[in-house]
Length: 232
Image 1: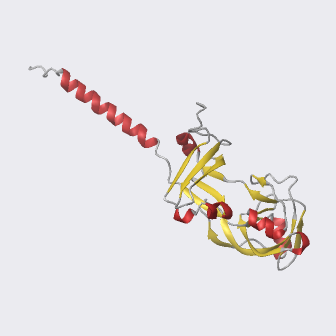
Image 2: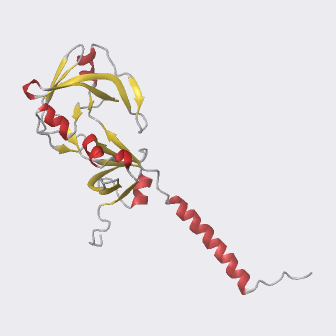
């Protein structure tokens, strides 16, 4: 029986090189970030089931009009009037679904000025001690003692995206936006990561207008500590 030909050094090096490239390619593929979506979140309301019935009648539920980017969330057909101090009002504010355990109104800074409210910047759900307002629907009225906020900018992402960006749930990031004559870097975007969420940044209308988001030439999301010179 003839013996198998011996492998020379160059052949062995080529085999090893191909194996390393193959493994490197697999590793790189797992670190590809999802497509970054930046959404302008216009003024809107989240309601409890009880408040939906008060505003729209016994047994009423929200009617989905348009799905939002995140699965399971939608803009409803229903709108209500938001009334602030001194009877100032916003006539038709959209409700987003599904319903929540506490009602919450999210406005931009200019909306707050229109209503005569001094609103704190809060993350969604953190409504203790915030101003209230009156909601007027076709079938009833709800007086909120608290729950009106300016929503803090934030980024939703999956746990895999968080790993690829080098951040964790609760960390903060920066959004670098390059636009004609309006380039800005927005800091303090709260990371909200969970296993099923898609990558999406939420800004309010004032922030989107200030950076001319529709004309943006490039958008980059980076960890807050990046390029700070602190080595963290």
